[in-house]
Image (cartoon, helix red, strand yellow):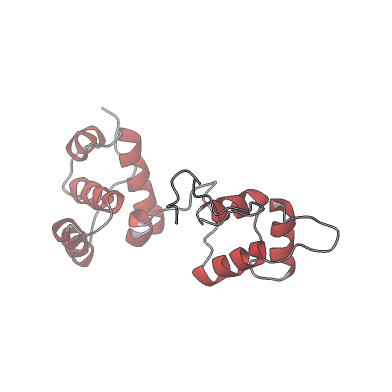
Length: 161
C-alpha cells in the first residue's frame, strides 16, 4: 500500500466547521462530500476506504487532500470554476438584451440576427462580452417570437368569437 502523500491534520476549529457542514445538511452535495472526505482523512483512513465510505473515486479523495494541504480548508471545500461555464448575466442586463431584440433593427437590416445583437450589446456596454450563441440561449428562454405575425398560438386552438 503506497504512503499517503498529503496528510490531513485538522485544527479544532476546522474540524468543528466540517462537522457543522455535515450535520447541517443544507450544504451542496459536493461540499458535503468534500467535508466528509477531510474528516475521514483526519481520522487516518486511507484513500480507498474513504472513497468507499463517501462513494467517490480514489482520485477525488487525492485531489481534495492535495487542495487542502496546498490551499487550505476554504479552497478544498469550494467549487472550482469549470471550463465552458456560461457567463452569468443579471436580470437587468437580460431585460436590456430582450428589449433590444424587440426594437427596430439597425438601418440596412430587415431583422436582428444573433450576431448583430451580440455586437450591439457589447457596443452599448450592456455586458462585457457575449457570443451570438449566448444571445440565442437567452432569447430562447423568453416566449417572444421575433419576425412572426402570430404570437405562436395555434389558430385551431384559439377560441372563436
